[in-house]
Image 1 (cartoon, helix red, strand yellow):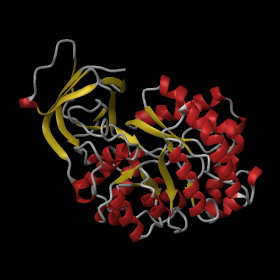
Image 2 (image 1 turned 90 degrees about the vertical axis):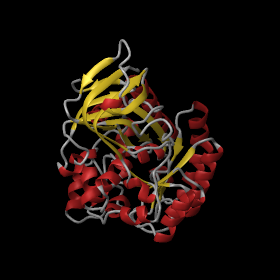
Image 3 (image 1 turned 60 degrees about the horizontal axis):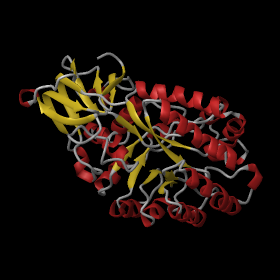
Image 4 (image 1 turned 60 degrees about the vertical axis):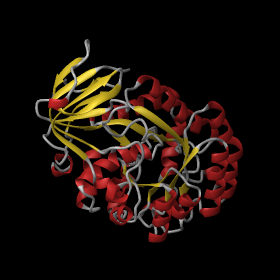
Length: 415
């Protein structure tokens, strides 16, 4: 799927610039061009800038008048668990009544309920469920999305989740980056034996995932009472030996040093980070590990937000993602995430846009090809139903996406 398109009449072109993550103060630096135009040829951006400097559109290129609307890069949702079966609405209301996430987990709820439903689902059912969520993501402007396994916790279902993502990547417009996250919770078969379960993941599942080339990343829920530092280190080192890049769910509920472990192992990203220490954040900045913040989850759990302001001020590259999942965050609302980033996490609108595009791409190792509007990158961009990128957070929680272009081809909305 690729196309040649010439977009003129752009009221504002707003994009971060670069082929790697923007860090610290540089996150606040967008290229903002009023009265702009954009040219893509064969799916690749060839030119973007002021209309009066634009080259002529090549023969055969689709010409589109943006009508004074803003154009921004496609969103990159770099943390999502979108292939699952079953729902946990009752747990949502338990939490609303004061029951904590870890209390639900300890009494056998939480992830384990999703595991039961996902183990019972066929590959075709998982593909259909995933496709519906990708359709929603596309309508919200997401052009690339990470997907994690972790609702099987056994060999067959973990592979089936990843096979579903492979099938979806062949039929859906959204690009999918698959992550193996077998150590998401301790399954009933290994109750009370997290280290033995990590051994199973290392010895049985990782080799199968690697042999079938089903994942680009490996991830683990590094948390007190689940998989603590030593087990997390063992799993991630084994995943690296198997050729997978690394991610961590780190310091979400209790500060145990997961962010520091991510820096030590030079993980591509560490995510959540609600309780991460300043020292570990500084180590992440030095290591080049992207700090992925997930405000929809903190909102849903009524927890304090990750300190994105301190992360940016420490020189980190911060990414912003949904964390769509059936338990702690049954939402994929990028509009609400952007508003929370600005209103609750003290990010500027420029930082929030960078975090949801270029730095999201960096959190997936893809900043060299997507995440910004500049020559040489894939033509993944959005036409907003708004005159400026400032409306993304200002029109709180509302979808501003009018049209989505993927590799230069219109895949959602009107021309």
